[in-house]
Length: 341
Image (cartoon, rainbow, N blue to C red):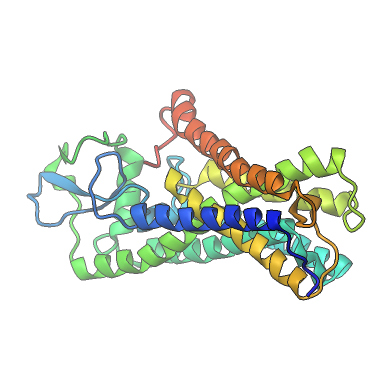
């Protein structure tokens, strides 16, 4: 085996192992929790209330409803605009990814950058599919059957609900929304839960990974490190900037929440990459794509600890961007911006 193990390497193994187990514990504690919280999102209308009252179902923090997957946080912006943005982002990123593989061959996937770029591309592919399905729902079902369309139209004329309000009176009873078939709506919501969960976790994993990738590349590798296998050129520059550009554009338009506990998926993603590096070096790879991942010197545990800690500010930076979006933009565009949650 090409990977030689020293005593300090077990400290590195312990750091990664603790991060991995800790992330699983956080997910087990928070993901899919059944507790109710008024600081959560609203999913759908309850159909058993009187005509003059609409009650919303309060769901656990971080839940994504079907409507949030394919509608924008901007009032009046048609869902097709979000679909077009996601599709164009997917196509452009796919072109650059293929170009990257053609220039450097498949061995380029030993780098975390390509892992992250691929994940962001997959997110936009998934987002395109979900947006296309949402637009199909929007256009092809009559309004009386289409709870999602009714909710979209209602959001365009109603002010954002207070998070502490679980019931409100409609101004005109005649304009109340009625769904002829509850089973149709429940079927749509049930299918959307899986896609919503997959989109949400991929989105938040991409957010942290993109910040980490670009910060390390532009802040550490380019100015301070010389890597024989990695030379700065226009392609490399695009690979370390387009991912952030398109993801920030998506964040500016989408309607997805950003709960903190899903930093765990970002941590699991990075742990998976590090374990992948250990495996391929154990089977003969001689060089390391990033010098700070090397295990053959005694300061390796310090590097691994720093890499573990840096996940928090990287994820936190993107969380601040999302927070700024939902707190600052409504002040400048009170009539145009809809709070996602």
